[in-house]
Length: 237
Image 1 (cartoon, rainbow, N blue to C red):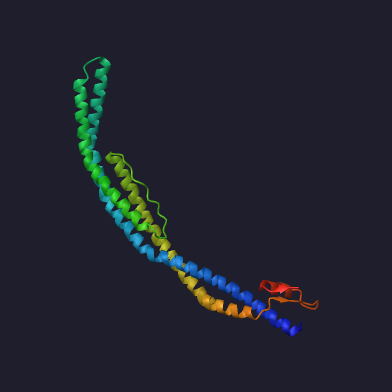
Image 2 (cartoon, helix red, strand yellow):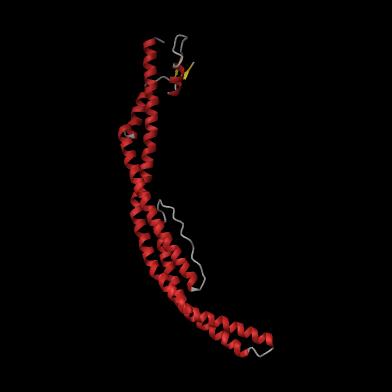
């Protein structure tokens, strides 16, 4: 092979290698842009849903705190009635009247906790709204399951924890959306320099078409020639 022909093939091989690198990088950037644009698009919607849920949970928690205070004396009376029943039994007295007091106290507590059940339903509604907002979105927000503790103090803790999660998620999604927007801008600028992947593919195919499948190099060929040709997919012998 004449030196001039070898130089032409080496230049073409270098071009093929360069185009391959550019095309693969451009394709990677296109995929990254698509993912980040999903984040940018979804961030306002998720943030709004979380903020709304957090705001809705605050008055629920306040109402549960009020119920907790109101039910405190009823629970205390129930506990006291149970203790008196146990004392009567221990003393060998008829526990019947005390048992009636226990049952009456229990019913008063359960009646009061019907309101708590309603607040739990409201909490679950907000929990479901949060879960639906993040479903099939690019954001990974783990929504904890609801409990079944009938006490208002337990429901209040759930409401506060869920409200805290909503506030945190709203902040995090806003930050992730902003970061993704920055990455999109940087990726698009790099794509502008690299070129469109489809056009790079066309150029690569054209360059490869000019290369032989196999070449034979003589002893006078540069030491790097075999490596450069092999990187372009040309068999060397």
